[in-house]
Amino acid sequence: MDYLKIKGGTKLSGSIQISGAKNSALPVIAATILSDKPVKLINLPNVVDIRTLLKLLDILGGTVEHNDTVANIDNGTMNSTKAVYEIVSQMRASILVLGPLLARFGECEVSLPGGCAIGQRPIDLHLTALEAMGAKIEIKGGYVRAEAPNGLQGAKIVFDKITVGGTENIVMAAALAHGTTTIINAAKEPEIVQLCEMIVDAGVNIKGIGTSEIIIEGTRGKPLTFKDVEIIPDRIEAGTYLCAAAITASTITLEKVNATHIDASIDKLEAMGCTFDIEDEKITIHGNSRLKPVSLITTEYPGFPTDMQAQFMAVATMAIGESVIEERLFENRFMHVSELNRLGADIWLKGSIAAVNPVVELNGADVMATDLRASSALVLAGLVANGTTNVHRIYHLDRGYDNLEGKLASLGADISRLSE
Ligand code: UD1
Image (cartoon, rainbow, N blue to C red; front, side):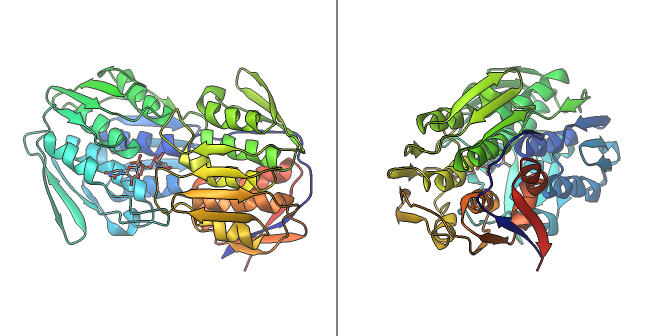
């Protein structure tokens, strides 16, 4: 198994390119099921989760050619509608094939994803919404079995809670449904906007894109023909590198990035004392060796993203006062706290709130990655810790960060990938 060895204390400088967004690429790949014609995806991030979902399309009978950042997909050859446990258990986001498989083929079986390190993560809202669209759903043998032999019907869907994956599944299902679907309390993330725009480019009428009410006119079962899709920049990857500059008090530049998508992180880093130059698709951050403490609450876009919580916690350890971080989306998303404390951080947890007390220094140690973003927080802490930090179980990082150690090394970090 691989691990990352980081010698802390080096300043970062220079510039890196941000990769395509994993969380946008996944629904875009799932949406290709809505088509029986070839489609080309570009600017895919070179990460394990993308390869996993492409493998699922292959298992379903789709024809996939993939090299690093480009995939040519032809789902005209698809001849199975069973998303098997072996794939879904590797990646929860495989549930995104549920809506499009059901919409295109009128039936499917998708393994239940189960919980994960950050919480239970149920899919009840996806299932209730599909039932409202006329699907018959049963859970049997660990699989969701869904049927809509006469096609899905447009419906009014009111989500009790804002759900990114649920909104994506219903947007895809609604694209081929009979009639109009209105999603109320929809998620507004840039990834949802990209998915909707891809479907609009294929001729479907969607109103309210990027708002909490999305209205979709279905094609009555007619498969779509997509134009090429270029994946948007990864706002979480970008935010993570901004945190790398902040924690090391460095100046670095990010290229191929969309600053609007990372407003919430930029605002918090500005409040902590970092400054920014922003132009077109470029952001330069100037760190500050006397970071102020931060107070933040994770919430849905455009609020502060839960996927940046762990990284900000790492940065907060270097601030000159107590920071308070509240996690509102996932009940168990604090697994990084004990690992950061192993490096000398002073973080106290009470329910969903973490108090991060300032420390004079962090000291390198062996630490274990527990989920994707928690892992990157440990890498960030390793960049400033005295001596050597070894981050183990980095398969979590490989799921979602494209060449993290290569990009950090190109900025001057002393980081290398080794085998246990
Ligand atoms: C997506 C992102 C993930 C991010 C999360 C929140 C992808 C591939 N993943 O995950 O990185 O952390 O959004 O921004 O894009 N919920 C229910 N029932 C449901 C669905 C969700 O109770 O049927 C709850 C979840 O447990 C969670 C909250 O709703 O507490 C938000 O989850 P959701 O937005 O669905 O997250 P994902 O789409 O799984």
